Image (cartoon, rainbow, N blue to C red; front, top):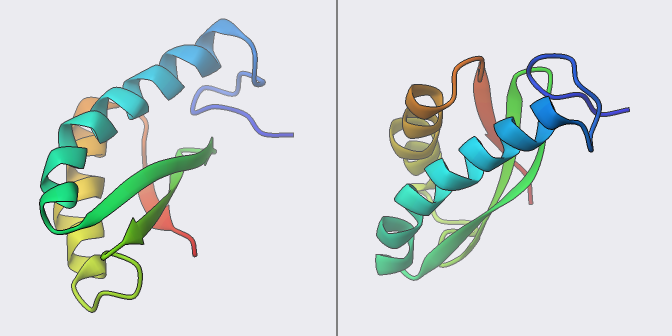
Length: 90
């Protein structure tokens, strides 16, 4: 079972608030990612770890780890208390 950063199961208020905050943070990042021909989507959130997928020009780009850490993770962690890390999946 997935739980949000605060131990709340999906579908309950805490989960929705965290997911909304993460989605808002991603919307702040998305224009910069799109300028380089890529995009980003939220895959899931569990135990303080946000899972995202980079695609388009970002998929396989040698700079995507830098984008992930210096951009995506930094902004999400600033905007959403309790996020410990952000990981990307294929």
